[in-house]
Length: 323
Image 1 (cartoon, rainbow, N blue to C red):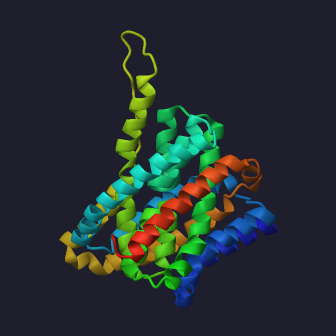
Image 2: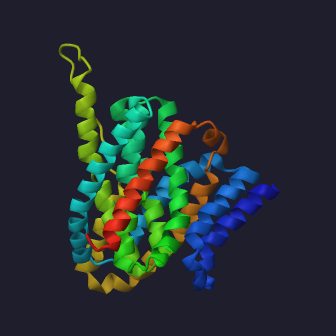
């Protein structure tokens, strides 16, 4: 009973604290994930099943809500610019990931799932690619756990590193969007850096997430090319695009088309930031340390090396203003 009460109190604190102490917002995202992870490690998550179900819903609502505080032309401009960068990054990430997987002698599905998760948008990309590849549950869990660990690390590492390098908000937003796996961690990291970083980071990240569609189609082609189909049967392919991407664009469009709603939109955006902090805490509490201990060295090396290479390349490109 005490553990459940402690969990609910901490969840409430991360949702509401920055309303009362705004200065905490610079550290709240990293603190939310770290506190959640420590809670899971020492006390175990008493609401594991519920929090697993709530995370994707809360994440989607938070991202859509942030769209209510953004201007559609700026969103589209940043998104259009981000498409080229994301195409280069995803092509490079998949190519390097496949080569690295072969070097480490990992199986096809583990290699592709980690590469897709690192190159596109973390857990969402893994969830979209897994049924296309017909991946085993073990390989899916492995890739998801590695991506989660690196997401948590990014939340803690990127903001102070950005300040150390003297990156402006636009630079940091682009770097985060191109180098951090999950949308939740991109939002969490850029929230700590400033409003412009948040806007640029979220928009470019969602543009990056759209590559789920062509990449999944490409993977489907590779798999189906070598898979015989009985005569008279049709191949069926379902690709899920995260619902919060069109939701985010529609929210920004609504506020742009009806300026009178701008005040309400800013309130919704503010609430969404607090919802994101709650989501990050829940993500931390969902960390399964037993599964992490079973990961094995080679898949972890694959994920870490690929992430460090891509993060360094994009960091250098942003620092020297090549993007």
